[in-house]
Length: 378
Image (tube, rainbow, N blue to C red):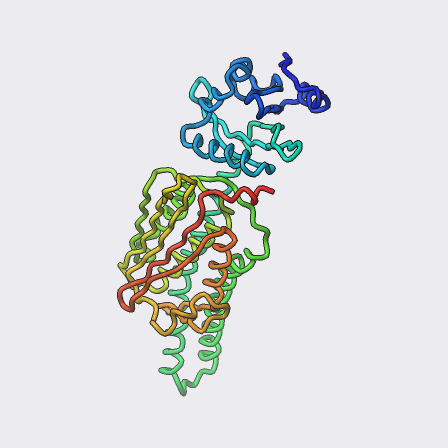
């Protein structure tokens, strides 16, 4: 079936659209009507395209309630700025099923006036499902590495210390092989500790070398995957982990892999500087501005640990900062982590700050815009 309402200046676009499996459309801003909508709309949306042609606003009813405001804001930005837009959102089929849609919109300006928007939409559900699965695995992997780092460093350090103590107690022992064996134990422990430290640090340090790639996702779901892994290791880490949020779903545009690394690094630091049976808490809050825009998201990571000495605080975000110090159990620090965290947060057009009091704890705060500015889609 072909939808016959067509603007003649888009004939070649129609030829492609009439044969495509994706939804092709042209929207006329002067009449606020679709001048072209291909037959694939019925396959992707599970609705008769004639209804949308007669009442374009009815398409809003097909969009997931949590995504409608986002789509309306994007539409108004398109009207105001007239720039290419790349969107990901959910629709709801008549049977209640949710599907992810990827939409590319190309504005067509004539005589400095936005006349048309041509676009392509496709069902992106399978790719999103694979992406979420990959992110879940990645979040658990990063958390597990951090946990293993803390779990393994401590006993290896203890073994190294006991070996040194035995060496002192056996000073003058007649069998030289004993000291050779003790030396092997010490070397093996130290190599293992260095290997764990390098393995955990390298992935985070390399994150700044990879181009940022923002996608729209549920930050509550994303961070929950991280926290659940830590919660399963509360006993071995001797810490309690708390996770709270202002809304059950908070959608943002972030580079998921980099942002999860930031959260993991802040949690790892909290673990390093918090005594056994201490508390590490993460809170996410959606902040709505008075002007009705998209607003921001505030993420906090707090602990009731040893705090940051006042004289170190001004240098915390410096590269190779002189504020670096070993953790409570002697964990190493290269002084780059907080600098990289600040860089990644700023790539998201956000800001990071902290409050801290010695022997009472530290709270880090990250505030980022929920959605990129329209220029970010160029």
